[in-house]
Structure formats: structure tokens, C-alpha cells
Image 1 (cartoon, one colour):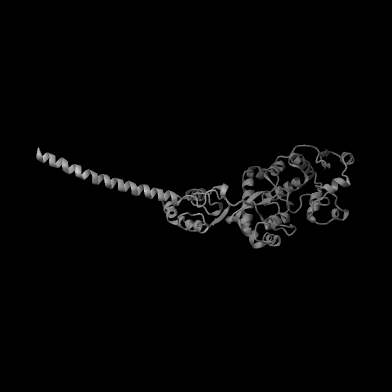
Image 2: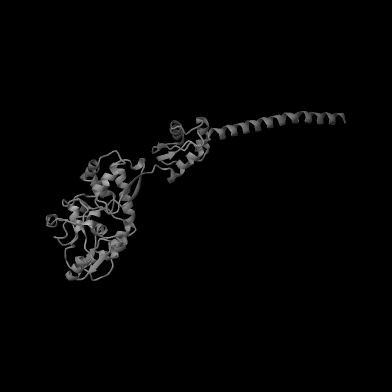
Amino acid sequence: MRQASAKQTHRKKGAPKALLILILLLTVAVGFGGAYTMGIRPVEPGNEEPVVVDIPSGSGASYIVELLDEAGLVKSKFWAKVNSKIGGYSNLQANTYVFNKSMAFNSIMGVINEGNFDYISKETVEVKDGARLEQVAAAISEQLPYTAEEILAKWSDREYLNRLIDQYWFLTDDILDEDIMYPLEGYLYADTYFVTSDVSDIEGFTEMCLDSMQEALDARRDEIESSKFSVHELLTLTSIVTKEAQAEDQAGVAGVFMNRLDKNMSLGSDVTVCYIFQEDRVDLYESQLDSDNPYNTRKFAGLPPGPICQVVGDAIDAVLHPESNEYIFFYAGPDGTVYYASTQAEHEENIAAHPWTEEDLANE
């Protein structure tokens, strides 16, 4: 009986020790967890002032911690590094991000791991539908550290253009024709583009626009190949239709141009004459209309040497699927309404019935 009692007493003495160890471990764990949680909290809750951070290509988690710390976005570098090891960030994506000090470190890392578009730098450049390449270069020069002249020079560089021809199936030697004013005219897909670290130079931005054009043309490749046009011819006619008509009228206007091409008539398009002089106007001078430049479709039959502006997919569709009609004339009145005619006499009646006034021309 005494022996059994002694054993029981021994067990009772050992129990408090184990309990103490358990409590100590729990205390350490709770303390560790608390310090960890505190260490990855926002640096300044409520401070939403933008902080731009550029994450270079190839950056690992540890290096990103250093970059974020330099930007003032890390509360504790030690715990940030712990989080970077255990957070499962396996897909960290290079870009220029916009964060703020009210964001927790793990939230910032999650954004970088996802490449979350909402946090990517939104310095934008709009390549406008119907914009001439000169106008596009001017718009880009406001966001990138290059002048419009430098951008246009790059877009005319034969070595660079040949590299692009090798890279994109839809670019051909057609763009190198000596009569073409700007080789990439019409090929930079009209859209709003975000300027990030990947596209912060002329080549990067150009290729982003060409990638968008490739996507648009890839989706229509079968239709293009079964049409009567090469890609260059298609974009050339599409650009003319774009300048001549609003979206709702483009299929009808395309139908008129198709009829004129089939009859081997000149397109008779003033917008191609405007392009010669890099202008956008309605009232052209007789001397301009008499120009011997091959872009003058008032004088020469067929398509001009190349596109005259940037385009979008809907306009391409209008040319691929023109409205079937028997018209060979159209006239856009001052309110934008398009009037069609099958004869010269009908066309002149439309002009007389809906004339442009000096006030209309001044408001253009």
C-alpha cells in the first residue's frame, strides 16, 4: 500500500512540471504570433497617400521586402521576411504598383503575387480611334520620356521595322513602301493603354499596341484570308471608313467604297487628301484636291499606299461585312447624318439640301 502511494505521489509531483512547460510553450507561441501579427500590420493605418513601387523582373521575395521597406511600407523587416518565407508567394509578378501605408504587408505581397490590376500604375496613354500616327506620338510623349519626334523616328527606323515584321504575322514589307508616310500608321490598335515598367520605353509601348492589333486580327484571320484584301489593304480601307463615318454608318459607307472599287472608280475620299497635309478638316482647297500625292483618292483610283489613322475591331468588321447596296456616293451632313446616292445628280441634291454653313465649318 505504501509503495503504491509513493508512486502516486511521484506522479502528482511531475504533473505541475509538464503543465508549466506547456504554459511556457503556449506563452511563447502566443507571443510569437502576436509579434508576427504586429510586425506585418500597416505602417500607418488610415494613410492612403499613394506609394509607387517598381518591382523589377526576376525579383525574389526577399528582395521585394527590401524594396517595400525602402518605400516605407514595412513595419518590421524581420517579420516581413518571415511572412515572405511562409506566405506561399510563388508567382511574384514584376510591374509598377501603387500601394499605401494603410495596407498590411501580407496584403501588399498578395497583390504582387497576383499581379492585381487594381494596384498597377495607371498612367495611361489613349491611342484614339481615328488618330493619325503623329497625334499618337504626341500623346505618348506626354507619358514617356521621349519627344514626339524621337518616337516617330523610332517608328520609321528600318532595322526596327524589320524586326517587327519578323515578330508579327500581319506586318509585311508593304509597310516599307517608299510612298507610305508612316510605316506603322493604322497598325497601333486604338485603345487605352496603361504605362507600366514593362512598357516604359518606345519599343515596349509599340509592341503592346501591336499585340492588341494581333489579338483583333487573330480573331478575324479566317475572314480576312477569305476576303479580297490583304491585311494591309484591309487596314487601309478600314482607316478611311473610320475617318469618313461614325460607327453606325461604317458598314454603309464601306458598301459604297466596295462598289467604287468594283467599278475601278476613285474612292473620292477627302479624308485621304487631308492625310497628305496631316489635317482634319472639311473645307479643302482646290490646290490640295489637285495634289499628285498617291494618297489623293480624289484623283487616283484604288486604295492609297497605306492606312491614314488607327482603327478598332468594329470598323474592321464593317469592312469585312459591308452593307450591300447600289450606292456610289455618300454625303455626311453637318448633323452627322449620312445621305446615299446612286447618281451624281442625286448626290448633288443631297449636298444642296443639307449644306455646311460657315458656322458648321467653324465648329468642326
